[in-house]
Image (cartoon, rainbow, N blue to C red; front, side):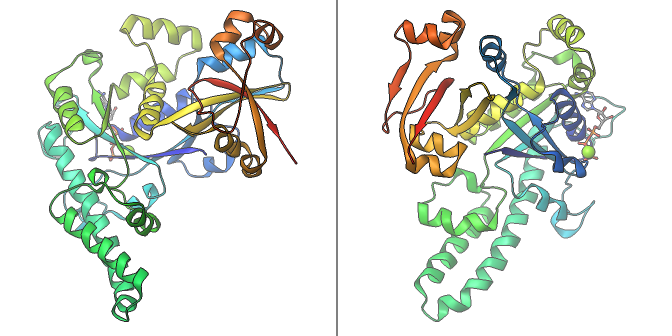
Amino acid sequence: MSLAAGIVGLPNVGKSTIFNAITAAGAESANYPFCTIDPNVGVVDVPDARLQVLHHFVKTQRVIPAAVKVVDIAGLVKGASQGEGLGNKFLGNVKETDAILHVVRCFDDPDIIHVHGKVDPRADIEVIELELALADIETLNRAHERVSKKARSGDKDSIAERDTYAKAIELLEAGTMLRLVEWTEREREALRPLFLITIKPVLYVANVAADDIGKETELVAAVRAHAEATGAGVVALSGDIEGEIAGLEPEERAEFMADLGIEESGLERLAHGTYDLLGLQTYFTAGEKEIRAWTVKRGTKAPAAAGVIHTDFERLFIRAEVYSVDDMQKYESEAAIKAAGKLRVEGRDYTMREGDVCHFLIGK
Ligand SMILES: Nc1ncnc2c1ncn2[C@@H]1O[C@H](COP(=O)(O)OP(=O)(O)OP(=O)(O)O)[C@@H](O)[C@H]1O
Ligand SMILES: [Mg+2]
C-alpha cells in the first residue's frame, strides 16, 4: 500500500511551497517513476532512520523505504463550487487519496496577499470546508439521483444506498464533515465508490513564519483548537524554511536545522502525522536481496501483514520469525539475536508491533 495525501487550502497560503519542500526533501521514490509525469504529483520516500540501522548490520542489495504520494492543487476560494476563482474541478485530483493535508496560513506578511485581507485561520478553514462540503454534496446528489429509480422499483440495495446518500447530504448541509460521523460498514461501502473528500481524515498544516518556528502563536493555537475539536491532526511548520532546508546538502542541513531547533524535517513530521492520523504502522523485512519498510494498519495480524507483500502470503502464512530494530542495534546480527533467544516465533494470531522485523514462512 502506498499512501497518498492531497493538499488543499486557500490560494497563497503556501501549498506549493510545502509541496515543493517535501518533494525536494525526500528522494523521489524509485518505485513510482510514472508519477513524475505530473508536476503536481510527487512520490517521495518516507524517511525512516531505522532502515539505516538495519542496513548497517544486514548486508543487502537495496533498501526500499515506504513511499508517500502527495498531490498539490490550486487554491480554492469562496464560491469555488459555483465557478469562482479557478472553480473546484481540480478537487478531482485529490479524490483518490487517503488523507487531506489542509494548509492554513499562520504567517502574517503584508507583501503576500491574503484573499480575505486578514490572516484568520478559523475563518479560512470554514471557507475551505464549506467548498469541500459543497463538492461532496454535488457528488452525492448525482449518486442519489442515479439510485433513486432502482430504489423506487423496490431494489433493497438501492434503497439502502439512496438512504445513505440522503443522510450524508443532510449532514453536510448541517455543516458536519462526514469524517466525524460513525458510519456502519454498509454505509461506508455505499459511500466508498464516491470518493468523497470530507470523509477523509484531515491533517491541518499550520504554515508559520520563520520567526515563529516552535512557538505556539495565537494563530497556531486557533488551528490546534479546531483540530482537537474535530478529530483532526495538526502539524506546524514553516513552508519557506522547509524549502531552504530541502535545498541544502545533508551535512549543512543538520546544522541549519539544529540552529533553528528543528528536530525533524517537514516531510518526516507530515509523514508521521499522517501515519498517526490513519492509524498506520511500519514493519520491516531485512534480507540479502532487500531491506524494506512495509505499511500496515495498527492491530494487523501477522498473516494480513504478510499479505501486503504478496496477496497469496496471507492464505499461505505458516509462521513468522520476528525481532525488533532495537534488538539488531544491541546484538548486531540476526545470528546473535537468535543466540540470545530474542528471535521470536509467532503464529497466525500474532498482532504486529511497530518496528517489527519479520521473516515470514510461507507454505505452498
Ligand atoms: N511560512 C511562510 N512564511 C512566509 N512566506 C511564505 C511561507 N510559506 C509560503 N510563503 C510565501 O507565500 C507565497 C505563496 O505561496 P505558494 O505559492 O506556496 O501558495 P499556494 O498556496 O500554493 O497558492 P496557490 O493556491 O495560488 O497555488 C509565496 O511567495 C511563498 O514564498
Ligand atoms: Mg500553488
